[in-house]
Image (cartoon, rainbow, N blue to C red; front, side, top):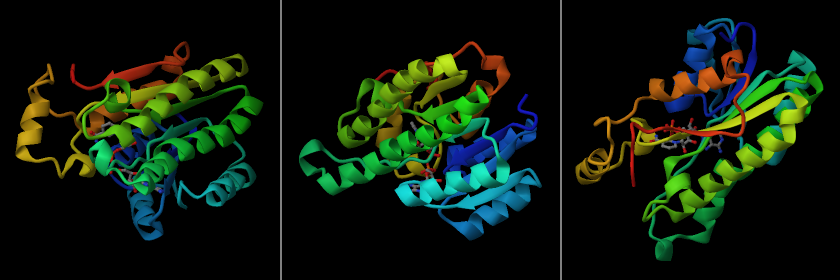
Length: 242
Ligand code: NAI
């Protein structure tokens, strides 16, 4: 389904990003694994096989991102897919939210996603093809008490997804968002039993999602099977209502 497509995945060292990398390589893609920990990425790349290439850089550092795309342009020469997966979540009531923490979430979730899409679309527009998938969130779509900073950063990703989809559709580049609900990863590991119970009571399908649930949709959106889909924010949330 993704035979020989070159796909850059941010935050590929664990959680949803790692499963996306596994699914994409299984479907024949050449994956570029972006993350901060060089040694860890090397190990993952080795496990995934010869079609996985580690690329260690901080996605929130503007110059490092430019250098990473310079490397892709020079040494690989094309980019068929980008998954803006890396993300940070810090929960706090509005009154207790430090502006530095708001900015940190905006840097990783919003600004880095924008810059990656900006540089990816330059390559993809020249090719007249390409697909970008941004990890949004049900919290960016519906809000959540105690998570206003995270919601701000993710709602912006939904908005940019739709705006960029309109701008790049005439150039053959598709841009979609995937909005997970409550997925079992490190990001949700600290939720208390009480919080889990409360969230699960609102999930129609009665269970937490797993990383495969999200990766299956992401890989579909990257593939040519989704060639008539752009500008959508698709929930993977088991029918969750806030
Ligand atoms: P996770 O915490 O397991 O993984 C986050 C990834 O982002 C890690 O690989 C981390 O190294 C990377 N990252 C963070 N800051 C970075 C930086 N400055 N430079 C490079 N990499 C950086 O989280 P999970 O659950 O796998 O989340 C993946 C995406 O899905 C995130 O965008 C998250 O906001 C989103 N999401 C997750 C949900 C969940 O229930 N787990 C629900 C809704 C959205």
